[in-house]
Image (cartoon, rainbow, N blue to C red; front, top):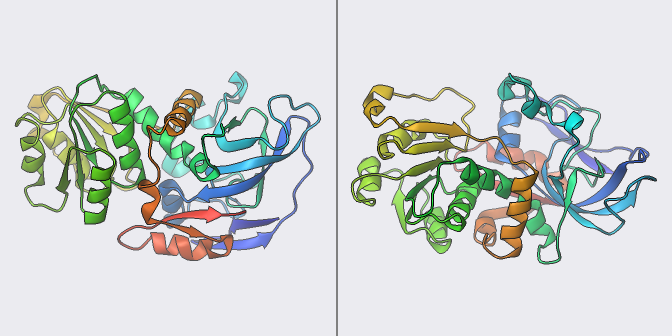
Length: 340
């Protein structure tokens, strides 16, 4: 099979590699779509992918072969590449350890496993989530980022009727927008520098959109919410100034949920907003419950992916190196591998 193998620094090479034999509790999956995640791009940018690793964790596919003891799946089942409930002894290392530095230790170091940037992958039978007929193969590849948004909303202090600010209208921001609406948010304001993305946010249900490049963006945000500010801010931009701005605008005793993650230091001036006594929470990916909720929201059309994918480019695996290089340039770049 063909796979995008990281040979570093900042270099993928598409190679023909063999498919190993299945263990009794494993399934072979033919991958349909595999999205390039922002975390993938940062790991590539900082050369934090182990040489020989084949990454990719936002993907969908079809079970092509099963091991001798597999009972949860059968040939032909359509799946998304995660969302299953792991046995307790197999809880992922980032969730298991009391101390784990994602930037330095990462999850891009397993050179013995081929993941989503390949024609096939092998999974334990409990790992994938089977998807319903209401969900297309393309939508199934987006369940993972949707589960991140779901977890962010479920982990926040969002209550029915709260006013919400979404900072950044990339994929995660627009997924958080829709998840917050499904959770009962009242007014939702989106700040975003791109006019096209601001329009997309309106199409997806934002009540107000604000140009993030406005020099008075903070006051503009506060004024849209009765001069009090949002109850909850979802920071989905990870720009240098956005986290401090989130604290500047959040209401007294409000909450900031950090969703997008900077891989460099960001400036904070706590003395400006200390009297508001705000709280901050962070979120890391989604667990199996979040994946299940995400899949249900997509199946029930409560999460609309068409608008989110409107600026996405679908690429062949041979174009993956150029796609990552393009993603490093200002303005960003959204890409999904089409492998079938």
